[in-house]
Image 1 (cartoon, rainbow, N blue to C red):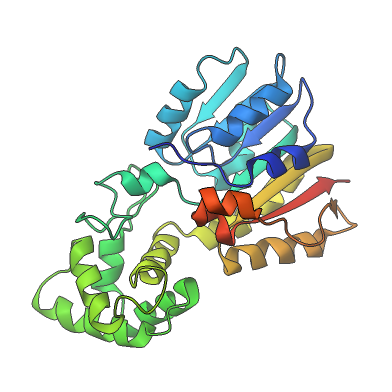
Image 2: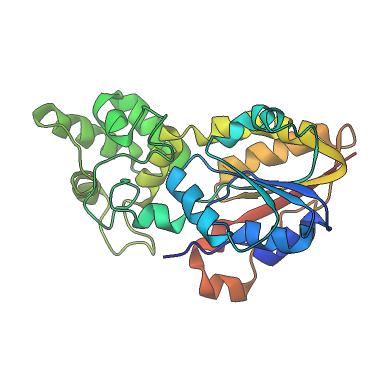
Length: 292
């Protein structure tokens, strides 16, 4: 199951790439965006592909192997962008892409705990080698108030308090370790059929964000990305959650006319045609800036 890149054409066009550019794909995934980047910067450009998920990185390596261009693959969290560039003797780059969406193969992997469709261990770590905190830890160790806050803040879950209460009651008798056990708890509160999305969607999203410190990572990396750009270099950021978009929007606004120019005042969203083929893209927003 290959991951379908969101806003592919719009993103590549917005970066204004040309042959010889050095470009960083901070969220390499399966390499879908990077393939189009390579086509723009070959034959003498450089692609730096970063992914915290080693399995995604290996898939991308295989996918991009036929392109004869300098490629640097890094298994690390993109929050370490400054160190990654320094370690590879790259002072400045011409373009940076960040796509904060999850990868379809990660959800299809039955050992990762991202999906509520199959019975898996509650994990949800992007980087299972270096990250310690898992979704199981959160479900079994966080207080009722903290669980409710996470579900509300990161998942927009209207029944956050009720779900947190039942989780705390259930874990007294037995550790909650499987995705199926958590789904069963959620279904006692959120009944099927009332919404288009699965009743567990919001809680699972909230857990994924908490496990991977996704919002903290975004706040940390944006200044590093702007600093890494050459003058007239561009940064394109794709978000999927209102909190992610708010962080990006606020940071860009704070730097506007100081270090950057905002290219699109309003975020670019997916066309109706793309939504038909990829419904997951419905919440995607693309924001682009150019370094002064």
